[in-house]
Image (tube, rainbow, N blue to C red; front, side):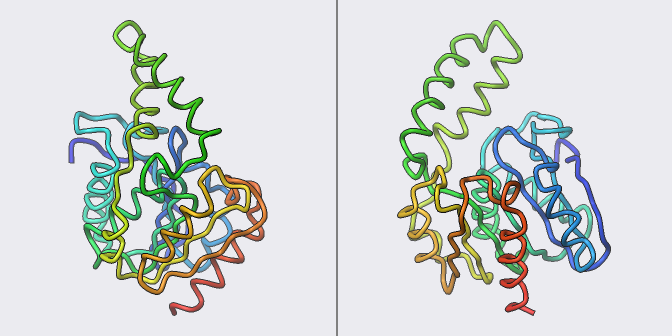
Length: 228
């Protein structure tokens, strides 16, 4: 691995890895880190090029981020873990669970999508416009270059086929907000195509783990009780 990922850690029991969304860092999960740390070893990562993790030289893609997670787990001798991913973090988690099924004890997918068409157009159009502007100035400004790279992830990725989801073997909870920026029909397709996945739609928007954390944490906790 060409970089060392930054992370926050709390607790010392079963590994529970948290993967944040685009342009964020592990602090997004402040309400999960504290809540679950008495029962789990909660590890909130900063994805490559996010937060305090360096960009490195490898491709800036969902696929690469899934390999980064594998390298992180290998480096810390974590044989398998519960993985909770939000937004792009959910997309990384899906890729990871397909690439490395034995490394995943359970999967929680919050607000993920299979492709850019999974996002509502009211969300996606401003992202596409922002990407075009940032791309235009990328050669002149390091900030614009970084912004373009972040936005490209949401314009061009992920690229997961429905039939690939059958590769996911871990117990899975698919969870989203009733007013999520991801189309509800798209979220339901994800749940329907992962073997035996459970679907939970709760009140709130895309950011339920942060804004509706009491309900979110209870839903995740109830799901995890079913796998032990």
